[in-house]
Length: 472
Image 1 (cartoon, rainbow, N blue to C red):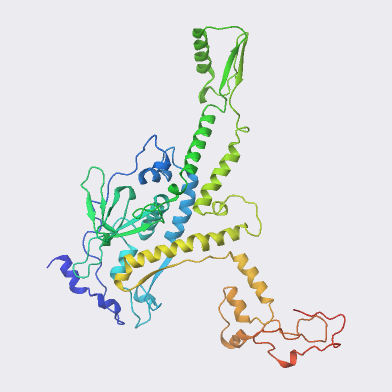
Image 2: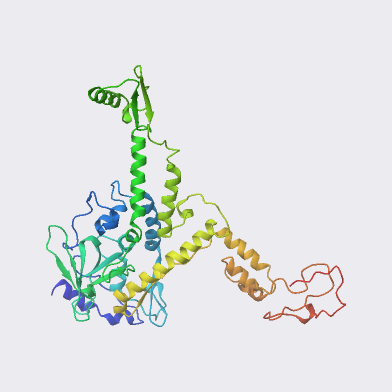
């Protein structure tokens, strides 16, 4: 009996649904490091083209390619997005919204467990990568090029479940349009120097960015504003050239007398040989009688390198939706741009919608075959100092209970002989120590008030002393 047959003898999809403890289930069989058609050449420099007409391969050079076209702000911002996505916890749910544990340690005695095949497939997509590694690459691919591809390689002989998950580099993937109402016929994956393979669409999880111009390929950040990145590369090259020349300016040598072309060439060559370049920077120029040097290039201040750099950086970060505060950059704070508010906006308006899209993609493309939904546990975490401040303000509200304040502080309800205090109301009406003998009136529509008729009374005209304070 083969290794696969041996494994199948012990594996049954229904066993994960039983509420009984079972013997350890064999892991996914076969050599999970074998995938010769997946691996091939990586990035290489394509000189002379602009981002506006760039292929996916060229676009990805913006991130960490080690070339002059790599943009640090793009890499920094993408790292924040992709690392956040990769580090997010996740769990399974059934279609009734019940959480399904991954293993018996996390579950009640008779609880349903997730299929161990699926658990291992996500925790260890292949023999080379963790789930976090795979997610980060796919997110970078999708954000930069508009397309993230996950290949469900191999299949279980009985259930058809995949054996491995691989990220496919988008610059090696071509989408073959379908016919007769079928959107996609196949995905062709071709590594240079290797034979192209056609992969059925049901074997590919394609995370496609919105693109109104192409039904088959997505639009990434490069396609959405290519000239922004062209200008950033040009600006960096200009600054590098400026300082590589010792921060000295281009200029002209002027002579009081007419000089021949031959003499002009000789002077230019001699002057450049002595004073041009980094190694000759800060040398003292000695000019002959009648010769003067006049710069024809702006200095760093006049060229406004600082202002242009900040403008270019902010446009890139705005396109990626990453606030400056997350990169440790100083900002001018206000009610809407304070660091805490920027972090909240990033979590709620950038990350959470993208994570919702990704978890839906994984559900439809993978976990639905196991009868489960893939759910990512991510929400904005308020800084601890802000949590305490908010809890302190909550405690001042009339009618709030002790258990509600403790919950806001992240504390469990009181237990034991103090459990009865959980529902005690803080700041009872009429007991605010304001020095008045007049009790506070009930607020219209305030649930649960007054809790005690003895501590609340209706105020009638003429009953209130002039020095009494009425809370509204």
